[in-house]
Length: 305
Figure 1: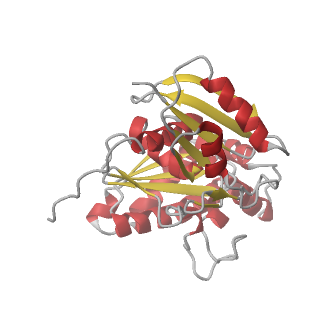
Figure 2: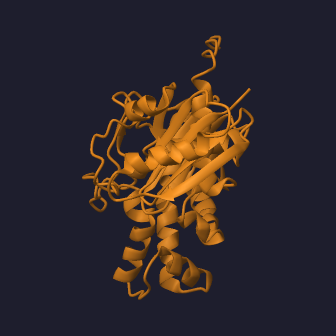
């Protein structure tokens, strides 16, 4: 069998790859995201990746959001030239192929479940903790995308109903406490003089008290969200990627402690938290997996238990 075309749309780069049914990358390419004519750059990238080989069978797209999977439109925050842009239809016109669209964090979760740290997990929450916090769910092996394609928006789950107002308009969102910029913001408000979350992580590793406290505060917010998700849908595995996850034990050690302190029920306490093994390749892998599912018959309904 040939391959499918996977596309990853981000504010800083566009990536595409031909991927076979085992997840092997046959050809790939990356270009910086231009300020204007993003579709022109994407069309050139698609031609570069697909020329000289078998025609792809389908296309999977993972895009920064917000998005509307029903309409097939995207409005990435860091791409002002795309507002309500009909990405799915434009790619379908470009390729003439079945095309599926999902959020980039949802594709991250699907990719990790297929090939990465969540492989074989019964129920997975994949999270990207970076400038923002995104997420995706795979339940009983099936991606849970939601009616409009926005399921798994865990960065905007409320972990403190009396907490800080979030940029989304909500209050007490986990992103306000645990995203990279907000970790650094809180630390600066408490006397730290560094520049960003990467520097904050280095200082925390070296024992700076304020930096350590910032990561412990962020980890507790993440733990509250993870425990809530585990209780709601019996998530058994959480895979975390993104720039903040690169902090390693500075993040994961306090997160493990906080989950142990917050969780009560045995099946909630049993949740396993793991770092990504695919890294930046996870979203492309997930987009490819979703493309392959467009070619397969839907699974038989599970028998009632």
